[in-house]
Image 1 (tube, rainbow, N blue to C red):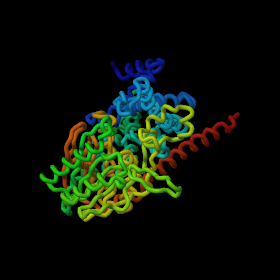
Image 2 (cartoon, rainbow, N blue to C red):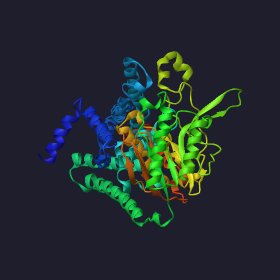
Image 3 (cartoon, helix red, strand yellow):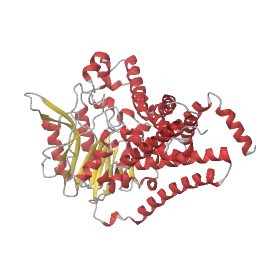
Image 4 (spheres, rainbow, N blue to C red):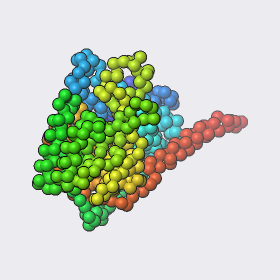
Length: 550
């Protein structure tokens, strides 16, 4: 078939009612799969192109804003439903003691509810695109899409409903060279590059279909897309080749993975069992390769550790016998201004070899909604009282407010707990407050050996590159890992395996550009969108006011 014949056939397909939805679904599925399977990461640079092509064509045909919003809504909903498929690993929620029908209802609410919350925001990319794009400056389509998508990814992290779990940058964490630019302007910048390249690929496809292989219409955008990808990779590879952090002094950390499931975590004898498992693994690791710091996962003990003399004494004795600083995930409490009222925290507490304990603790700053606290509790208790069953703790936890960087003889240590690690600003705050390495404790046992565990670990990779800090990650059932300052996973324990890892880490005191400026890339993105929208409507207004010549 000749190119003209291909274009004619494609033109007929474009008029079919099912063609645009089919392109949208294919685009969303491909993009989601790049976040699930590492081998598909290169596809992320083309998988968004069908969505952009559909938005371009619909806007040129005069489709209204709501119509384009719903087009992007379809893409977003399929995308998030695919990403969050791992909510089914909660089934049948034995650890919560709910009935089978209630477990089914809660699982569906988690899966569909979070997908819808994310979709409502991301779908604005269609609305923004149709108000900023016009056919006369087709070259602007890649910029508009990249700016709009980057802006919306940023907005996702601003409220309890916003969960920046599926950022485009996550597609590239298996290719360290591709994400080194995150040290300049963060993971949003990596996503911007992916969006921009997809837009250029869309222009190249459109140019080929409409005008053949003419340089201006096809070769130029394709070559520019390739150049951006190669430049980003080249800069990353150059940095990694020239950077030698091992010339500085390092020290050893052990991360312990007890593989205690959610079903067992809340049993009557869970704390006694947990302390025995983690004590034994810590002693085994110390006997083979003594570490300076030992990290246990999130809420290893489901009690307020400083209010539990029996368990605290055992940990103090363990720190003395091993000569290691032991960081323990547990709960902590503090008295409020109100009499007889206490605040509960998900915390990490440091125990030192001399028998001392840090005076405070690191308290989880970004709590999981519906898991650790109930947003709009008074409303939900009336409208959907069964939703309160999602919070196993009964009462809401209190979020921490500070980075609580702690000094050790080896480095100043920043800490994150679980959900904290998907919010870039929290790691950046720790580095701003002097953290030279970052310890991350998490409990991903709810989702067993699903894509969730791997995606969550990928967020830690991005935090490491953004701030050029080593990250030691201890997870209850996996993935426990060591990640270097260039985003390479040095070693990892897979999910559902009991064990420990010991590795040398190298503290950094230098700061990246991103650690100073944060997500400043959002500002030029917004400025560009405002410019394109104003330019479009100002010119259209002038054209309407022109009087026809006699």
